[in-house]
Image (cartoon, rainbow, N blue to C red; front, side, top):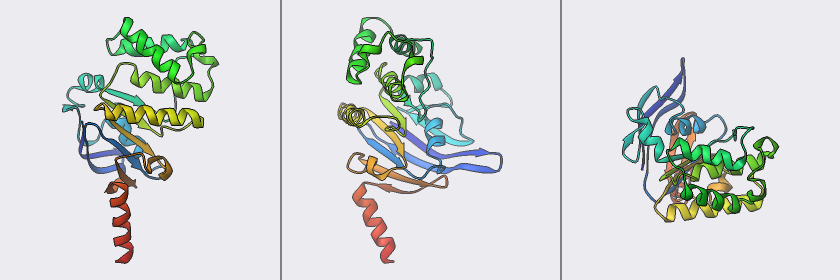
Length: 229
């Protein structure tokens, strides 16, 4: 569902991402693990179509995000590390607005919206302006907006930022159900505990390069072999 081939992103002479190759399949939850500044966010934003790669190609669901960005983005929901919402919209209005961007409206959207708001305990505030929302509430609303149009792929940058423990558990359950139904999730984090026992595969990124990729057990074997050598 997601394929990156020799993706590079440069800012002048500085290379933030250096020739990343990656394939994430349908029904897979893939975790990007690396320290801050490793190139995770830049890579996620290129996949989401927010940034344009300097070179290389990115496909979502077989669609080239550079040559047909609208079709690629229609399959994708993006959850950034810093939640941005329109302060003068209510929570419900924001979700309707997001769905409308993907050409969706009507009873099905209303039902989906109510399900997501209920899941994240936002129903009492659905008609309140988002300017009154706490950081955690905004994060939960952004997560809801990524799912409201029923995408096939979710790209999420630092998913647990700003969430209380209950909401973090709910999000993990939501993610797991999504991939069990055939969805694809690519998430990034700098915390091993978040990907451990949760992601199907993990890619370790450092200084703009993916230096290792595999299941957690495979990565441990690679590390042990490197240490023995």
